[in-house]
Image (cartoon, rainbow, N blue to C red; front, side, top):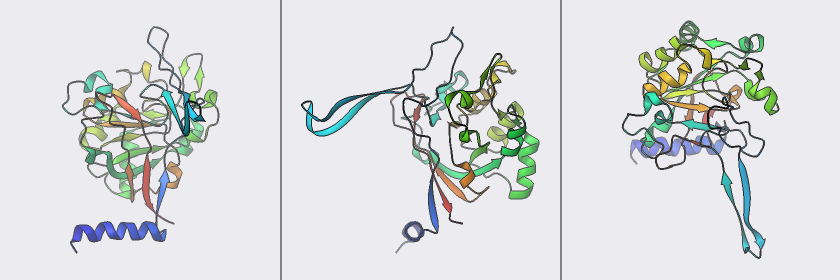
Length: 263
């Protein structure tokens, strides 16, 4: 038996024994799923909707299925480089052309939930990341950087989107941190629990939406509206985040799962 088969067989054994567990990092996708809002001068993304084609009836006596309608960036979703103008000219930058190997990577989870509980506009900085590395080791090349904020525990669209008179408020990344992660740590991408990878007030930053601008400008990815990051250790988990293979897709809803050692 080859070493490669031995490793995969061992993984199956660890899964079957419960020593490795599978954690679902995905929000349910339905009519109540929050959708990011844009100023009225821009085209909005539609909410999720579903219509029955047949349900064991005259339209299909033995089968049930539906049509669905939604924007690519709805619910727990994947941002491809082509999603942003800074990533539009890369080769293999759409959901159907990105090499599938790039959907799988080690997870580095930085927990800032206590900070966010005190300050909803918290921004992750390079210094916070480096302090985390001092405790947990350097972020490896090709890892997913996941920002745990516990924002996914907010219930209802109003609390989740948190829109006020001056716009939405939610945590995110400082622009220098995004550059550091993309260029000096060469991560696969970043994942967040909020509706998008940028902070709620990022439209007012210089440049606007720096996570999208610099992450996709480096050919990296984004994962938004994750949940259950509190079930992952700081290091040691593997994340699988594979979008639908939409031709020329800028992104896609997806089922994100993590393989992590059981406690």
